[in-house]
Image (cartoon, rainbow over all chains, first blue to last red; front, side, top):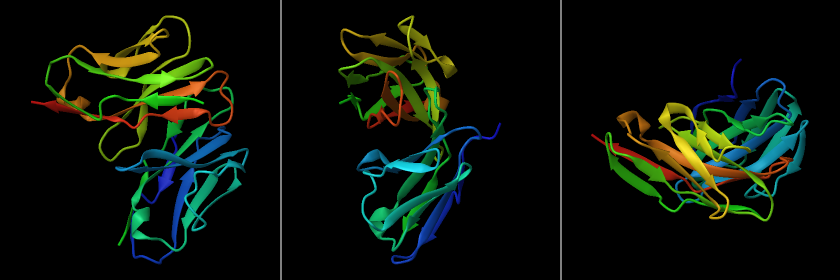
Length: 113
Length: 115
């Protein structure tokens, strides 16, 4: 069974550009999480969905960040406009109700110059 | 509220030496406990987990951890480390029963194995 899939693995963009990160959760998982990892702040939860519905977005840093989950097999995290301080590794994770483990994707390393 | 404290941000250790990575948590309710490992440029991978039963939990790659409820600790140990164990290790806690995202990570411990 394929794990959580994220694309792209690496993204380099210029300040002010729009960035879209993509995630495909494990089939059958009904929870999806977006995390950001930086040296300064460690692993931070940005937002999570249950059955495609955003449940808690209190970790989203500001209005420049938005996330969607149009269906059970796809989610996006968008940053518009991007800033250098958004440079980080962004992880997607998924989980199934009744399970007690989160499964992480390989991450997207974002560099904003 | 729940929180996780990893007491050491960096742990250097010589190859074939034993290692212990410390994790303490705080919670007013029952918890599940986890250790994840992150190898360079990769995502997080589950090492082991404590749900219930025996307080000594064995995981992959020769790692084990012991749940100590009185000390609210879940320290990770390995009797003899290899170069390939160099990675970032995260302790995490989730509440029982697990609903929503009651899943909290520590700040991580960077383990460096020295040849």
